[in-house]
Image (cartoon, rainbow, N blue to C red; front, side):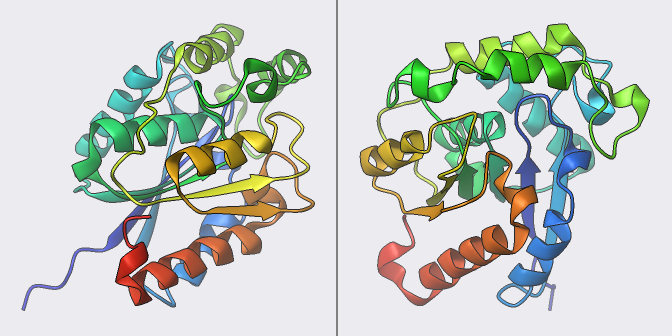
Length: 241
């Protein structure tokens, strides 16, 4: 008998963040999911212009970022569908991926994100964001080599991609879970609340963490996802949510 394909989770970071900045989260996440799915693997993808792909120009549209991620999976020989876990900018990529290529996405977890037309720009990008992005772009990312330094042009190309992107008002077909932090200083948590109501998808809120929720409380994120997956497995009525 042919063994089943492993369950693949693709992790996508946010603005200016490389795949190497997830911290302990991937290890904790795999260990938690292994209780439900014995053969789980996690792939950490860099968006063009960051991390291992620092020498490339970042696309200035979300659609092009999606295409770059799909091409990278094909290059690695990864079969779809895959599960997506993504935060901030990465969650925009994941939402567009799920909307345009639903057969390639088994499920998606979107963390601390915001989508036009559901939330106003003042909530999607708070006034302090440009200054924080500038600081990020001029410093080496934590745990990454100096060659992974972010170019300022790529930072603003990603910002342009965020500003330009408009999601469909209709919920993408793959099941989705939203996670957000009440202490998020970059994206207002009410963006996730509004999206949850518009798309009819579940939302879990962390009462203390900031924007980088998977790094600040990795066990909480891993448990929230695991509980959602277990609920879907037990109750067919929620498999589409």
